[in-house]
Length: 102
Image (cartoon, rainbow, N blue to C red; front, top):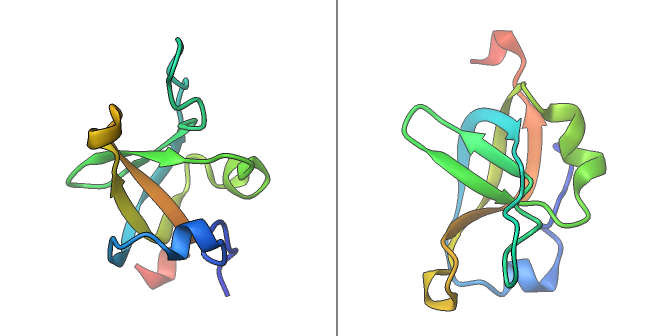
C-alpha cells in the first residue's frame, strides 16, 4: 500500500477536483519567495507531458526519500488561479515505481 500524504485529510477530500494517477519523477525545487506566496511548493512532479508544482506542507518525511525516483502519485490537480496562484498537485498517496512494473 503506497504511503498516504493527504488522502485522509478532510480538506483534501472536500475538494471537488477528480482524483487521478500520475507517473513521473519527483524533484526538489526552491519554493517561491515573497509576501503572499505558497512556500509549501517545495517539490515539482515531472511527467512526459508537464511539470506540476506539488503542495508539500508537513510532508517532507514522506516525499524527500522519493526525490529523483520514478513514482506513481494519486492526487488532485487543484487550480488556485482565482486566489492568485496557479495549478498544484495535492498528493493523496505516492510510491516509487519498481523497474519491473513499468
